Length: 120
Image 1 (cartoon, rainbow, N blue to C red):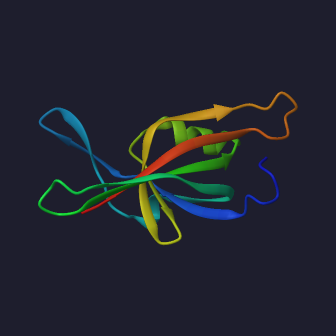
Image 2 (image 1 turned 90 degrees about the horizontal axis):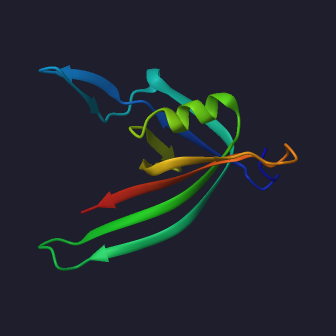
């Protein structure tokens, strides 16, 4: 359980898994039939960067997401890196491996996930 100020809600979308010529791939798309809503989260900005050397401006944004440590949240977060997270109308993809943190007291356990978004 996260502290009482963790009041954000976000939606996690599972992309469609497709097989092409014997390999498995994922199609990123928003599909409300394959999504879960998670409340009691905290979303905080981590960093942002711009690349000005390209012909067009590119921007990367990283956010830190703390989700409550429940069994279904941990399975959703750790099971695949191919999840799409939607928060306040913005869409992010998981960056790196989700990190479950189990509280020694059992009161503040959570899953930390870094989210990444690109523009440009």
